[in-house]
Structure formats: C-alpha cells, structure tokens
Image 1: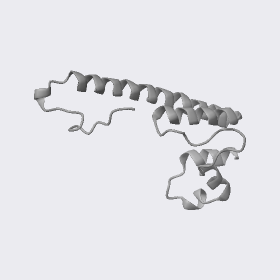
Image 2: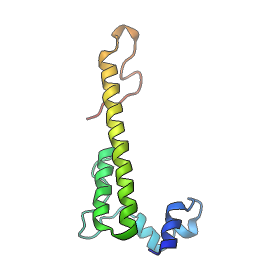
Image 3: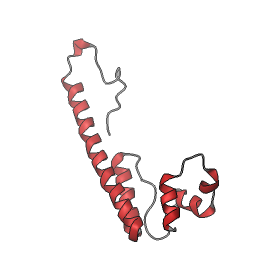
Image 4: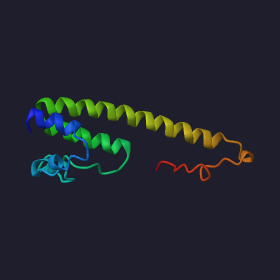
Length: 114
C-alpha cells in the first residue's frame, strides 16, 4: 500500500465507499488468515484475544505499517489491562456487597468473566 493510501486508510470516513470498495482495500479488511503467517482474527473475542491477534499482525508486517501496528498493540494492551482491573474491581464489589442492598450481578447486568 502506498503511503498516501495508508494515510487515507486510517482517516477515510465510512461513507467514502469508492475507497473502501477497491479490491486491494477489501482484501485488507477481509477476515482471512494471511497465508502461512498465523495472523488472523482473534480466536477469542476478549480484549486479550484482540491484543494477541494484533501481535500476530505485527510479526508479518514491516516498515511504517509495523511501527503503526506496534503502537496499536501497545495501546490495546493498556486497554486490556485496564479492563481486567475493572472486571476485578466489579467482582470485588459484587462479592462484598450487602445482600440486603438489593444489588446483585444479575440486576446490574454484569456478566462474570470466564
């Protein structure tokens, strides 16, 4: 991908269908495994699963794309770590909640991590 196309790839609005419908852009967006690389969509749709998928993509890229995706991986890891901490905090609050308060994990819509 040319540098100007890469910049547009990062900034193009969804409504710009002419850009997004180009065959070489569609291939980039396809949820297919990159032949022989192991890079694919996450095996589990969890924050850590997405970070691992991004790590696999870093390993098959080079140059500017690799640097940018490494930044994405780093930010993704920070988000995943923060979400893990929040899940732990929510679990602790639910565990320590006074049953008489009427607050329960079911009532607040929280789904326990598995």
